[in-house]
Length: 487
Image (cartoon, rainbow, N blue to C red; front, side, top):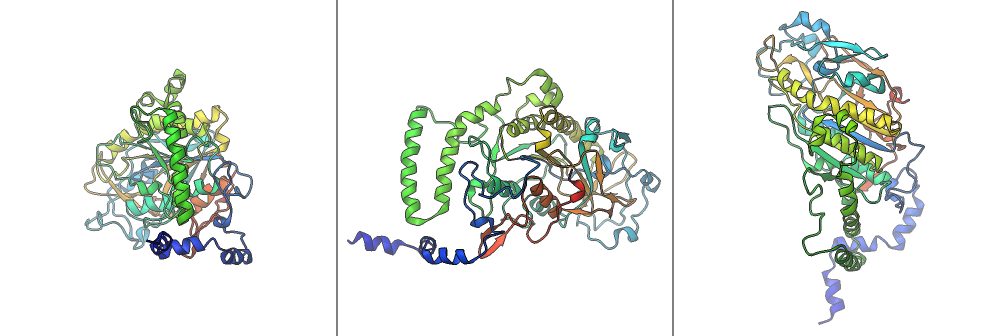
């Protein structure tokens, strides 16, 4: 048997093109193309793992903490005060307001779309005199440190496409998540922790949660090294990180060195970038064996910190504990910290469930902003709080004086942002008297994504990756930086 011939026969068409793509012909062609705007052509910075040449300009933010409220909080109950709705309770939503806009199948069959005003009281707070619901007493204390965007809107009307859209810039699965794009572009300042970390907490509400899928923090067509790493509550925050019984650090080190030699041989033969990713992930896991336990150990936090975040901050896996971990991750240079908190999908029993949700979310969210501020980190940390869409002004199901539900509403919703180059104590945008349509300064999902990248020093039109013959970006062919938000 001629081993050389057998080896050549084993080469697939994909491997052939993968290996010959390194040839002089492609190099010559690349030299003829203008590399500006094509980040995928740039090299990797060995210090950060990001792209050489990024950030494109001086950043205001070094990291992002995205507090995603999965299920879509009602802006009518929390932020968008509409006192005139009290006089309209039970009346039909005017056709002139709806303007034929589509609604979900959950309410399209109702014989009536009755207006349901919020039963919760609002009052003004701070020097900005911002209207805030009684459900959020702690958020009310930080209104002068945050910016409210009341004119957010999205194209998606159901949860899965909407959350996929706000996380990846596309309603269909398969694209890289925002955290993966940031990890790809900027890398991490801490080589002992991932650039992109995910934390998930469960609902306080009693109604069932919306599911969350790992593709929401996936890398899509980017190399898998850029995907988010989920940290869990319990003794093993990262699965399969600890050495099995009988294996010490020295043995693990020798095993990884030998495995890396084999993988480098394999990579040279097949030219598969995922092999390089695998080597890097093994090395990251080895370093995380010491960095993660130190991160998760809260014993050195003073009592005042736990008092600030609330009693749940001592319970691993809760929203409060995850907010505290988010601050610790930001301190350690993790680039993108994604929190998901479930339980906001309140089609019925909204007054009961939104009250329960706010009790678990309000204090730690405000504490995170205050904690970052007193440590001098807020100016370089961008915090985002919000869901995937809003809630309808009309009631889903039976309307009573004390109980009602709300359906999905993509036309307008409210989020808030803090720190990281954003203005403080402002409200951007406005909605009509029914909180149904935007009347001023609309901000769509692409605009939000472009603005987040801008705060990180990234021109969203230039952070691209070539896949299947096309250069993709987080904002696709859309998005404008919202200049009115920038400090």
